[in-house]
Length: 450
Image (cartoon, rainbow, N blue to C red; front, side):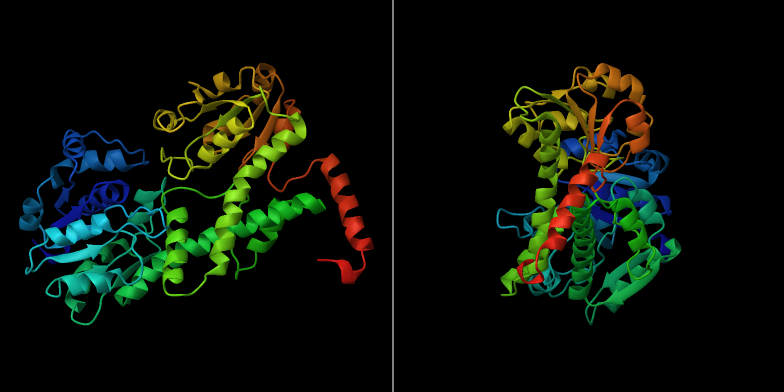
């Protein structure tokens, strides 16, 4: 077998590990994927995929003969030299990354061998140095993943960049990893391990910062009568800024941004440096979810006894991932205000039901809207753009919609009979209020302005 088609080992078959295994198999490699959960391994061996990720199930089915799922580390060590570590690193109570699963993998490795640990799990800068001290005879390469849920297969097969971190003495191992990725065509950046680890955290923290920034701009737009969609478009035309991640909404969630922003903040704090900007990014994101409640109260007054429908529960479309989803905070706040909450998601309802036991789960969007006093669009599933909104308005007690993702066309909604509230979008009444607010500021002496 050529070096390019060498066997590949994958440790951990969660979302990242499963996509990694499937995509390497698609490239023609034999893949041995290991997980410590027997039920998960047995299900995957039968072709059952519990993760909703577009294209993944087809990829696994097409390459079933190339992929072996196992619980045995010995089978992995016998069959592959390059071992991609794809285990979870969730946040601890302190906000630091929990590296216990990574440590467990290291402890299982033989003290001396030709195997190379390739770290795809997101870990704090300095983790590689720590691992190398524990196993000085083992080659170690950092190769962080930059996959987005909902487009992970496409991201893997057509990367914009591949980061490979290796310290002196491990250049050969880094070369082997580079050969695996060369057919994909993305720019390959070679660096040291700590820098590679930092690139992943810094990238996610910067994107989260852009989201919190545009959400703050949206909140100001509501006060002064501007349209955040137009503001974001004008900003994005500047090539120094770009248009990506400038879409106002109710905040970010998922398995990466909240965890990685917190991990980078704690990493800095553990060195004695206060990362003040990330503190603000986190605070803005948490408050943004709660602003929806204020919008509802502006129209409905007290929410006690009101029936509020949530459309979308997953943290983003094309996934069933509920980790750090805005719907979790929003539903809890609504219930805390005395509202009755009903929800629908095209994919995540079953997974969400375990987390939202007191929320009524509807089997369709229309069912969720029956008798509702208001509806909040939480996740921008394409299905909701294609909904018959005129028919939906007729089923509601009051056709009030808060578009938490600025996903729907306000003209279509108002034409269907809805009162429409977006994020950073204005109604005529709001503009009048905002104009008076601006007038008050303009009439205030400069010395008294904040």
